[in-house]
Image (cartoon, rainbow, N blue to C red; front, side, top):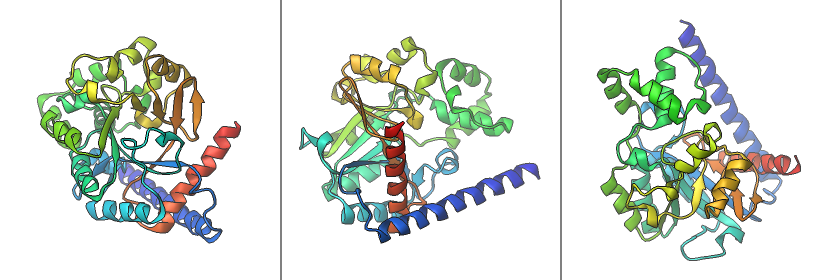
Length: 309
């Protein structure tokens, strides 16, 4: 009974936040949506599927195919799409950038559609997951549900991963496999790379929480420093911080290893030679112009506050 009440409370809270976002969007549009065309706005998608598995469904990191098509149509109607492949100065241009995280199979299907439409996208991958290892965040989420304890995302690190994985039975491993993903396999990744308008970037080798890694762990898990995967030479020096969080110490470590762009935080910033760019999280709740512009308004406000502090 307690779990049901807690679940209902979370649902009510999420629905209330969606209503607030929609209202903010209405107000923002009513005053002319200032500043939304004056800078680069990056959007992040995860899974695109009509039947998402439990992990993306419960974390609300998915869009149905219908909603995804509507989201792209809304972006197309209000922004110019940025193409990093065609414009070396793309970081300094105002417009709309499409990105995907985690390497879901649904993101490959979405990339095919975007490629036909002439829209570029950057895909940030956990290569260990693509090659069959359990996704660390999905594992942590699965264990948290099994134990009925709140998720502590900073526990998404190599030490915790090994301890949790070793404690699962074969039956639980099968359940975990159905709980997470489905992620691309190497042949599907090869198809993604072959598309004319796609780029691939780094999301660390697994979906670790960057700030919970030691310096050596962080460096060891930068994909561009690994020699395990044939795709690495094709990967750009772009990093999307898993869980959207990375501190300046690790930004500097990445910059010292030639990384140029890191997607994280709430506002644009520069750390040495590294450009830090925030992203707007797209999910199934963003399905109208007011909800989209509500998300944009919240992102711009957060950015102004963060820049001042």
